[in-house]
Image 1 (tube, helix red, strand yellow):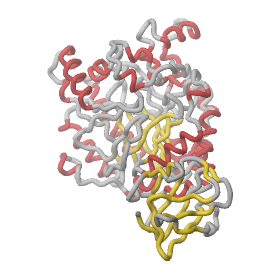
Image 2: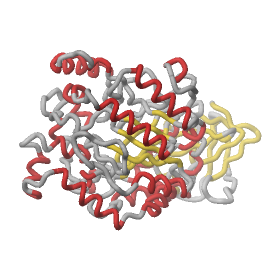
Image 3: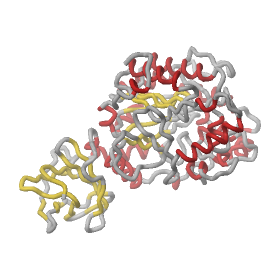
Image 4: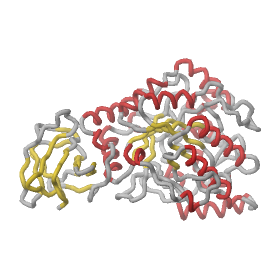
Length: 482
């Protein structure tokens, strides 16, 4: 693909098989805001965006928004900050974050991620605070030396690739508070805060630097892109030229409506447009559809059915992406919900991009998060590895005659069926019809022994299990849809 780029040319790009096959990726939000690591836990982001209040995001549950929350004097974060740190400037947390790198173990992180079965890792390289965890050669004109001298991005890339996974980068193109630090209280404020002036060139230069240095397999932008499509399409084309099997997400909306408009007009027009184009469900959100993308990225939302377009569910292990020391046990994903969500996403043709938020003060992954990664690792060993390379079957989900909720996926000519919960005795796999050559095995046991089965009255496959099993994955060959 040439470097000039236009929409017609960009749309020839196809999502690579490696991404469709992956099914699980790990997101890593680890910024200076991870040092204070605190946000309120009594609201969800989707509820706040839909609340209609001018200061709704003052109660943002995302800790990586700590600096913005401080701009509201009576916000929960401001009250916590005054009580804990007094008048300490938020910029001082960067030095503490950097000092903690002495104890950082990127290979250990990568080993934990790989054990889950994840095939790719996406690291935040610049969030809305503008901090860069690599020695960028692109100077920030508003906050000098606002970057790490140690190449954290490069070290993470080396560790991830050394563990057999693909490496991707997140970049906040839509917001940078070193260029525009207005308080963001609602969706209109957020959209109006996309910086102008020198920022589009700065962001483009940093993205080009990231691509040249790290060749990321995923280039994951957030919020929007601060320039016109005429400037964005060549940037995308250059990325595909340098990384032909690379992947772009769906948060690259060119922000040309900002040009030549007054702030009040921008707020009004963009808030109206966003409210019409951003859907919210399950306390999450689905970003607007830009002119070009490879994969959709619903946030804290799982689509209700199979999608023909590639997509990934993006969410944290609790209610935040960055580390939140305020999260209690009730705010973290229970095991059942995590595994059920993952199999639901796979059955509907998606990937799960599950976020990890390391602590800033010691560069470690909290135990509450490690436990959940290990739940995925354990399930992978007991059948979960079958999701790699999976594609949707003729049905994603069905409730059986006994009330068991099943999810289905297929790899080549094998259909995999997984119940949402524990099962025992003889179970009837709904919507799967037996044939004279049907064979059923229990996946994940190494030898995968054949299981006894019989044809149910309705032609379905009734399988006898070797005991009570939690979310077993049944591999069915020579079956058809009923």
